[in-house]
Amino acid sequence: MRTVAVVGASLAGLSSARALRSQGFDGRLVVIGDELHRPYDRPPLSKEFLAGTFTRDDLALEDADEDLGVEWLLGVRAESLDLTERTVVLADGKRVRADGVVVATGARARTLAGTERLAGVHTLRTLDDAVALRAEVEPGRRLVVIGAGFIGAEVASTARALGLDVTVVEALATPLAGPLGTDMGVIVSALHADHGVRLICGTGVRGFTGVERVDGVALDDGRVLPADLVLVGVGAQPNVEWLQGSGLELDNGVRCDVGGLTSSPGVVAVGDCAAWYDRRLGRHHRVEHWTGALDRPKRAVATLLSGDSSGPDAAPPYFWSDQYGVRLQFAGDARSADTVTIEDGDPADRCFLAVYRRDQEPVGVLGMNQVRAFTRWRRMLGTASVVAPS
Image (tube, rainbow, N blue to C red):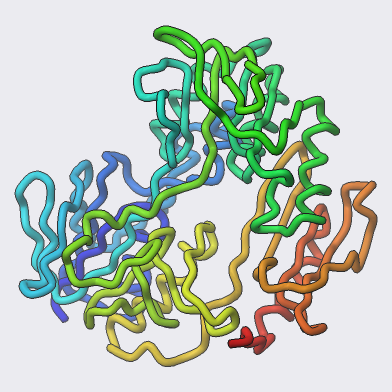
């Protein structure tokens, strides 16, 4: 294997390049990215960068003296993958032939119909998104956040601290019921009310008012919320359309085995676009979190270089979120649990630790301002050999 192409130039792509070099690959290494920016850190976009306490330089992921010997192709989109010729075809007509391919094209923010030509409506996924949103965040303005997931909650928290009037709209009856379960979702979403943010649940968005610029959000229940700006945070869509017709197996992402290997030898996938098989859960799923993009490329690169994907499963998914001065941490899978219990602290104090179990075996842990206890439980969770029922 003399040439490896990494398609995607964010954290997962950079982590793959680092892993290739650290694991002994000394051939040609090409990293392709559709953004013009060098790899940058995304989590601060909704927090420190939006608040103005981080600059673009603070977001850089590469060390100042780091030299991976990479050939960077930035600002150009991959349009297709020819597995027969083992070639990545780019939008500018260039073709990159490679012996091995790492798919790390990530995901993009979902949008809502009717917002395409309406100023003041934002999504938050890229640095350019964050720059545009930050330019409009001013004290006293009315912000409506659509979607009470982690991005929406973090933007609401940051905007409220900056003096905006904030309303969060969530279509589900309980925010975060998917990743955290209903009981813990109720507790965590109470942070909004604690800090003067209105939370409206159980109703969707019918449309938007305004001619050239948004001035309101119309809800399915008939209400119209006044808005000076809107943040749409309704999830992300994996960037895998460019792989249609390639022969790779796609299903809500690129389907991979436990080591990141796709349905084609010599092609692995990592990051938000990769649906790895998890033996603990008995199914494929995408891990859309920072730690997955940092750690899983090491496993995938080992698979790519050796051709052998046998070995231990990747660590259970882990993510964190900072909202209203509270550190939230979660590891594992809440959906597979049949019970959840408070093991330490008190939710009323916004400081507690909860453990999710299936058949009395731990499958997940949630911490709110419980960093030390959470870390211990996360280590134990990583060693558990829980296998999902058939």
